[in-house]
Image (cartoon, helix red, strand yellow):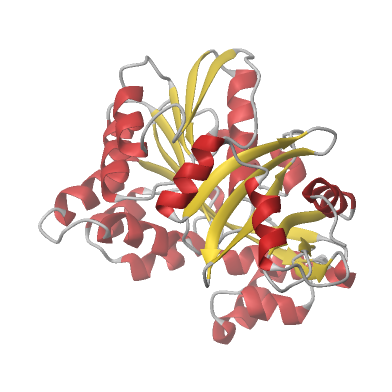
Length: 360
């Protein structure tokens, strides 16, 4: 007999899991330290999965799922915690994934970020992007940055999220959290209206479409600090994605805007620790120099990585340099290092160079 969904969520959290997956004809599974593991015996039939998921939804959310066939939402479970849920249809059956969101927002230092990331929180304007694949910790990094800003500065922070994950308390800053779908109908409209709400800092949980990117660039250009996430794997790809989403005739203007307003890109990934003891953060950090901004304007993005490698004094570091540091510390295996590095052919040279430098 299957248990209540609350029990599955509780088990996931108790075992240190990040996600719970409910799928038809499969046992409930949790992602624990990056690995999918069954947390109960016996497969769940489609009707059981359907009822468990629908029990977590409001009437309005059920109607949205029925109409759109997929739904992002937040779920607060008493005695367990807060989750980001995604319900969707798989071969005609309703299935779902639930991401646990700890309400203890960690400090940036505890996440494994370099000191330069703290400095980004002092900026008064421009665009800061946190990128990575799903499950790479983007939301946690963004929340940690917002918390530092709220604790150390005075002003108004407005977040646009789908759904709201971490819940912030007002501190030195007034923090207004707006949820897409319940507080506003969409990112572009919400972001456009935000510019009329006296913000100092604007946080966009994800730059999903052309119009949202366009307004975010304009907001950064007009003196606001804009923090946002993108699903890209490294800094050059992030710049490419920002520009390529626009039609060819608009790209010259957009690339000029990006070169002007971009203040930082943090591209991160989580790598299994040696011995299976959790995950460790590896990150690529781009802090645009004058030369990098020229490369962006000229679309010579192939030169960006080389400039990052020699720009460590400004806070730059490539993903390979970060991985080499973790490998030298013994925090990850050589196999994982080769799997996650940018280019296997050049990684060994990066590793040798790292051992000769002391700037990490």
